[in-house]
Length: 202
Length: 156
Ligand SMILES: [Cu+2]
Image 1: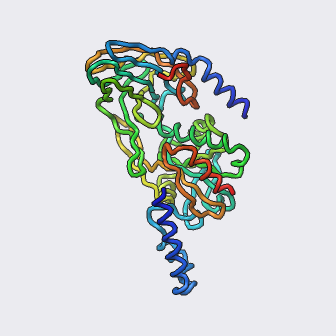
Image 2 (image 1 turned 180 degrees about the vertical axis):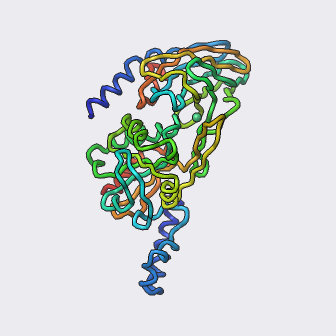
């Protein structure tokens, strides 16, 4: 985490220096901005390009989230271990934040759209904090979302027709204006997590 | 909604006494076995428990069997370079004098092919096979989806 913030500061410094020397027109083009993003970190929501369907059947795109802070993670409901554990952690954070988090967009994006259809997500999420939204789509749509968040996932076949998914495990935080705000790592101590989320809410 | 969730949590906590049972064979003690409620039978179920080895020699959990699932397996959730995966493990080592947990986000029993839905408050037996201690059968309590473990008086 420490290393990440150092990288971010470094980028910020380089960016302001470059902004002086370069013409601002070229600097502001989408391609120009994209080319300067750290390839390991999620893009700002404003630069992402995806369209998914939530567990209530509504279309969602990154623009819909700008204006509110957001907390996003990838997973799939066929895993009985990581997924419920992450959802339980998040439900606990939301409980601790109380109504302060009512403004927060909280979304699970499935990496297993084949099985996690909207109604399947709805069934599953009924067990957790009602502020958590589930998102799915076609495999291409999920692929585009994963690209924006710099998330990787992979189908791992098991016996017969069965399979499981390997996937990026962190929870991504975004500021109100869509800027990437940090990652909560799997099993991170909640003493660090709650203040991190509060910074997004402020 | 809040009351509903609260009721759910209380229901999960009330019958937890069963999950506080422990069974010993030789130096191996198995305790706090629990599982989570399943949604139907399509998704795999999960098995968590604690193993204590008070014996003089290392041992290892090598297999799980249960009438609750066709293909129970031992898995370990591993997060490496930020990627979560859940490889199958051949055994869970239980070194002499140590306590090893099957717990959320680590080692777990993966109950593939549930033979029936796991309902909150129900119990089902599992038989654990150890390399040295042999077999131990223990009832597993099904807790709520939001359970993070049984609440027992003595942690160990
Ligand atoms: Cu597993």
